[in-house]
Image (cartoon, rainbow, N blue to C red; front, side, top):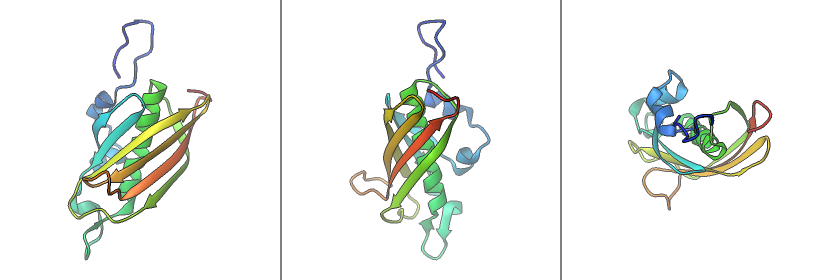
Length: 150
């Protein structure tokens, strides 16, 4: 969480610092890492590890880690748009799987927070395994600020 030039202002959310902390949580267990971000979008990555495979006989990555990646990428996009880290609840997160991830490939999840109202954040994004023009999943979600406002 980086500092503002105004010493009285709360620190602005910094996803690089957030992921450097490596909290002992679900995302760190899965290996989800920061890749890139902008003012209202985040891009995270999930390694294509053997222990995340859902079907051994096909080598297809399980859907749960992909959903966790997209939920985290969505949350980070919300924090970036809001300008600070705030607890929030996932109201709705819809994921449409278009195809399986390629065996052994890193999955990249990119989400943007395209609208922030007083208490609700709207997010959309996609996951791919190397070619953004060939996504493996699309996601759309809404989040509610836990304190009643952003």
